[in-house]
Each structure stands twice: as C-alpha cells, then as structure tokens.
Image 1 (tube, helix red, strand yellow):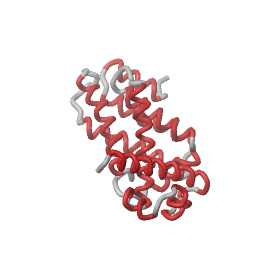
Image 2 (cartoon, rainbow, N blue to C red):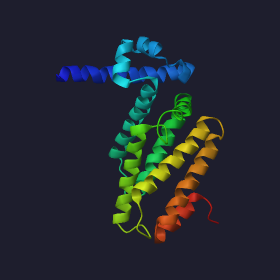
Image 3 (tube, rainbow, N blue to C red):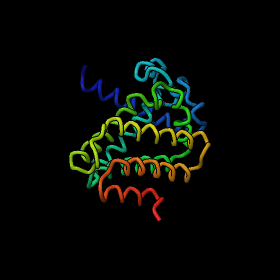
Image 4 (cartoon, rainbow, N blue to C red):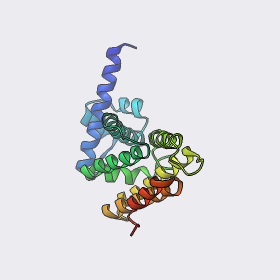
Length: 210
C-alpha cells in the first residue's frame, strides 16, 4: 500500500483517539458509542470496526496511545540507573492520570471487564516488557541479592499496580490511598530482591522506615 494511504490511516486513527477523549470528558465512557465516535471523528462506523475491532478495542487503543506518549517522555529523559526507570514509568503514569482524571478514571473502571488478567491485552504486555527489561538490567548489574525470574517479577509488579488503579477508578479508594499503597507495594517487592543499599533505599522509599 502507498505511503499516502498509510498516512491517512494514521491521521484517521489519531482523530478517532482525540474524539474518544472528548466524548469521555463530556459524558463518561458510556458516552463512547461507535455511532457517536464516528460522527465526532468524521469517519464511517465501518472504519472504526475495521481499525479497532469493537468498542473495547477503541478503549485499549486509547490507553495504548497514552502509553506511547509516556514512552516518548521516558526516551527524552531516560533514568540514570536500573529500577529507577520503573519508578519513573509509574510516576509519569500517575501524573498523566491526575492531569485528566475525568477521562482516565472511567476508562480504567471499564477496562477491568476486557480480556486478559489486567484488561489491557497487548498494551499491558508492553508495560510488562518495559519493566522486565529494566529489571534484567538491574540483575545484570548485580543489584539483586539472588537470581530472579525478572519476567515473573515484572508481571507481578504491573498486575498489582493495575489492581490498585482499578480500585481508585471504581471509587473504592481515593487518590492519596492509591498513591501511598502503590508506592508501598512496589518498594516492598523491590526490597525483597535488591541487595545492599538498593534494599535500604527501597525500604526508605516505602515510607515504613522509622
């Protein structure tokens, strides 16, 4: 296919995802129907189904686009050391969520019902791969006290973070509780596997050290 066609497809996708954010901000996730989305983006309903599959696919694509932005920021300002890259990823994620709570809160409350352990499918797998790569670098540098399954560790960190995020999205906990419990959970997991000063640093970051 021609480059011109590819560019048009990319433009259409970008317009649709902008329209998704607008509709959610106006009337919540329930306001995102394929018909309303097609009208707002100026495309045919059939185009939406061809590009995204269904409504759940639209929401996952919306989250994926947000992840693309996070990765771009991380590339521009890379972490100086392993482990800090994972911390920075979650910090940027939380900053993004807090900036547009009216959009992201209903999205994550809805995604719990989509396929996969975390409701994010390939998007979730991308995040896990990013964290696993960071943990693998930490292991190679000798930061871990023992030999770890970094992929399993990364998936645990991600899935538990998403569980807390969904509790916030559903209103079970407030933002401060989400942030505090997420930091505590991440740092205690890291303290369990890191060696020396890295372990002490994680315990201090967790907030439980006196």
